[in-house]
Image 1 (spheres, one colour):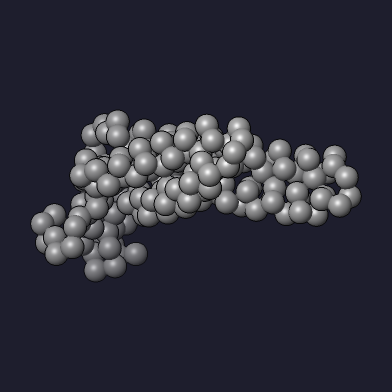
Image 2 (cartoon, rainbow, N blue to C red):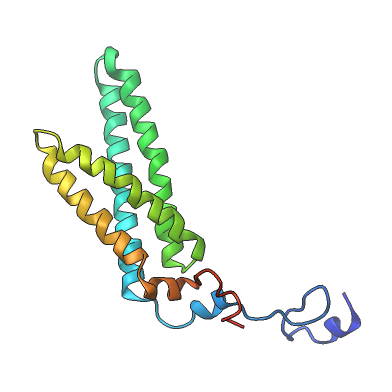
Length: 166
């Protein structure tokens, strides 16, 4: 540590070259209130994550309490659902904290939900309302995630716009 840094402990943090770090556009994007669209997108991703956790726990309970023939399959499905729940839950937390990386996992979650919703809609059972609900949530979340206000809130710039923030 240089003598200059020792004498000024309350000064701004310094980089290796002794200069103060520049404010990035990501820092500037997190200033001010979080847009409602971003909060809603995070809530929808979190809701999907919680639904996967509930489904995973339900499958584990059925696997443990069920007969021996389907036990291995139910436990495997339950663990798979619990692991899959991590993606939307981590994405939801990232969106709430305004992390630009979180938009990708959130969009992947919604894109993965669309074929699941389609297969639920093809069933001739009680799964049809679940398919409608899942499709509505996935499409709504995708629309919210591609919104320009969400891009600005997360500090995401389009291609060729790296110099605009400087």
